[in-house]
Length: 189
Length: 354
Ligand code: SF4
Ligand code: SF4
Image 1 (cartoon, rainbow over the protein chains, first blue to last red):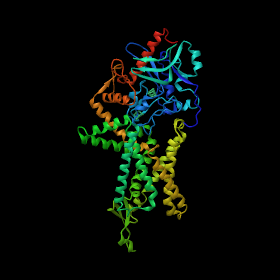
Image 2: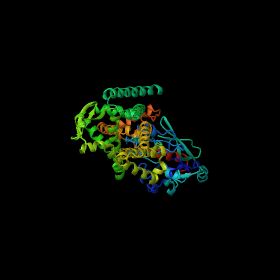
Image 3: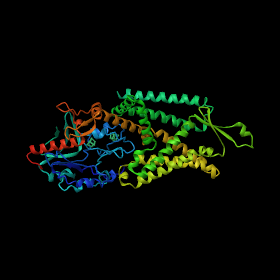
């Protein structure tokens, strides 16, 4: 984490309506060196009984990460770039607080390791100025990593949004979701 | 609020440290059995104790940590106490003494960690009581004066004789060289992790020098100079003894002072894992929470309810308009809800993709 070539002008833009459920990102995610070659990205059917809609979820890298705040072992940390890192393997006690409290349903409790693992935006790649694995393979650009100019050129009718409302709670994130032009937030529920 | 909380930690740390000083004063028979050569180590140990307890108390006061701490003891002392005690002991042997949870993460990793941890824990068990003067060795005066007999040594604990062994016996060899064995274990484990940290691309990307490499380097310096001290007079006619003695002392004291703050604090934190196991086991007895979206059980109801309390204590409020909570949903449910809300927003925007 000491010398990095992290590009601060590059951002993550997610548009889950473009997800076709191909799971290419799952395969790509398992190439990430920081997860020990285990896939961390989530692709799931939204309501299988009534629709074929799938959704994709990466860690949103919250500005005030609930996962880190509820961790009893201080195992999760956010770095200067705003990347929220996966659990410190020496500290994590596998309690699943983060798994249950993350408003986006991101962290995974690996029962066999008695430890939590999650997306850290391919820190091995992003810290070297490269794009996260999932974003490089997504064929429908549900996952896109690049500059704001690039995304506004590609999606002139959409606005990146990073404010989410869950009942009483507003959560702001580093990762953006593409919404109809002019949107300011996404109200869940 | 924060300062008053830390005052608590300060108080507890002071009381425990003072108690340790008092016990050591009398345990060493009013310093008779205290080894003055170890004075620097004594202060290092006391500081580590003070700092460790202080940091531990500050840590416990964090709402999620306190929740687990409170619940663990509440469960241990409720219902069948001995069943819980047995579980506690068995789980501690498995996961603290043998660090069994590391095994699935990698067999070699586990072996290396086991060697490192065993070496460290055994070395603590030997050196701390020696430094505090709780243990000392005495030579039997009768055998000492008679050149015809083998010398007999006594090991004393708090000044009470607990065992005796003859010089040159297997026992004497094991006892007098115990720290040598510890050093070799630590070196083997630490070197493995050092190599791993220098070759694993994922670790290289995320580790820090002071957080991950320095602790290993320190352990290696401690062990190598410790071995050197021993071998210096055994095989090398005392060569470089002073240099190694000073380096050893400095690195050990650095290590001790650092325990409460850096990587080594995980040694003190790890027992919380046993608490998390008990918490889950007891929670399952009390019933599971079912996700309103997926219709599947996903966590214990106890966990979901406690998290609502903890998140509120931390300043988050996931209460929904209908009085339920976003935390009532499973991780998969939460992801689906977000996708559904997003779809709805897109539909309202008049264009699915935009
Ligand atoms: S999305 Fe979840 S896991 Fe990622 S930073 Fe936010 S709370 Fe943590
Ligand atoms: S599972 Fe690990 S990282 Fe997550 S809250 Fe528990 S201790 Fe922290």
